[in-house]
Amino acid sequence: MKITRPGTLSEAVQRSSSRGDSLQPNFSEFLDEFYIHLRPSLRDDDALAAMLVDEPAPVGAIVDAFLAATAEHLMHRSRFLRGTAYNDGRNSEEAATHFRDSPTAFRRRMLFVCADPLRRARMPKDARWWAFEEF
Image (tube, rainbow, N blue to C red; front, side, top):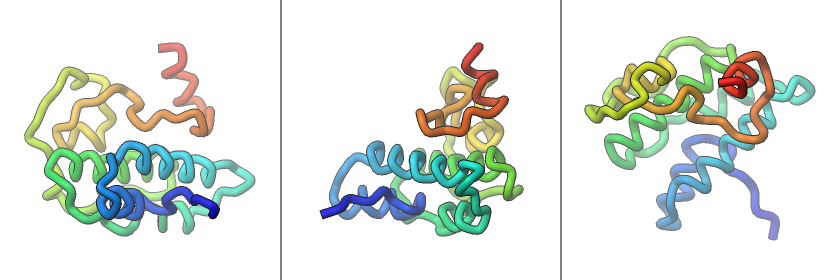
């Protein structure tokens, strides 16, 4: 039986919820799949947008805010969509220590993370990637 990565952010959440698993493994697999589709030879903006367009089912306030920030950040980072992702009710009231470095999509939701919270080995190694590598 071939196991496939979640094809959408919503699917990653659904898989975790239906199996009672932690979101992290499915979320990481989704990011890998997204980054594979960012490769110049495979890039298809419609396919990338489809991976983010469906709003995941609510999980909890902080996780919901993180998922909305993730979708928005990926949209901006891949330069194919602008604007916000999902509804503005997915904002967190929590604060942490990474205020200065947090990407805008996360900061707007009061989520303070490292400068590149979605970093994975399969990420395209563009100018932004190398900037954080030297950080």
